[in-house]
Image (cartoon, rainbow, N blue to C red):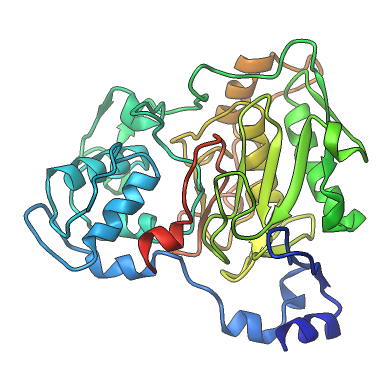
Length: 371
């Protein structure tokens, strides 16, 4: 019934095998059918909101699932045979590290600000790999509650790289990219990616050329659903949205279960039932080129973007990071700070995290958490 409705409303819907995609593309917010807006999918981790206020020493049904969440994203390195519902030292340490990475006061408690971050749909890429991070928790930090704004953490957090600092080789400065033929994407959708690539080439010596030969392209882009064979299954609408692998792997996968908005230009109101495609694409391309997550909230490589926001302009932090890998474009004239419209510091949990960049064998988040 819903499929027929989408066809009737002339929305682009791809009907392919379950492991590929049935991605929904909308020209703009106003074109999204009412039933989608009224049945917006909340964060995959909404059940966690019941934990607000929990602190060390508490015991509460479901905390074991929160521990699995932190394990999934690298904050609890070892997976015990059975997580308990106790708020133990292991969970407290994970919460403190998470808070540091996301510029929150490291109380070790599940306060409201921390839970608002946790509830957001996010990137499947772990923030900590093999116990190592170059986000805030991996750098010297200090907290000064009297001088910080809104009680936020002061730190030296900035751009980061993958372990080993992988990058495309020096003889690969013109990278080709192609789209999975089975997706049958329109030129309008493909142009969104072209624009996203251009944002990175403006600041670096890299260029990007589209090719129709998917199997030999340096970067291979596809929309998939569920378990699609790379060890990092997608988990349905508003969970993990996309993942990309570090150089020189070149794989860039997006969740075909999402509702993608493809209109270019300024978007001031992205429904929590839909995702701005270019915002995701720009972030993921940063991963494809070798950048990890940043703790700078204005940066493209910050792991989340709040609902109601379109975030596509490279910040200085992104520029410095990518130029450290590939040098600068001699014609590049610098960057200005993001405008207020590009920022969104609201606490709405319709935010999303972008990308999973290492070929780690993760399981489906929803299945892991039993939600």
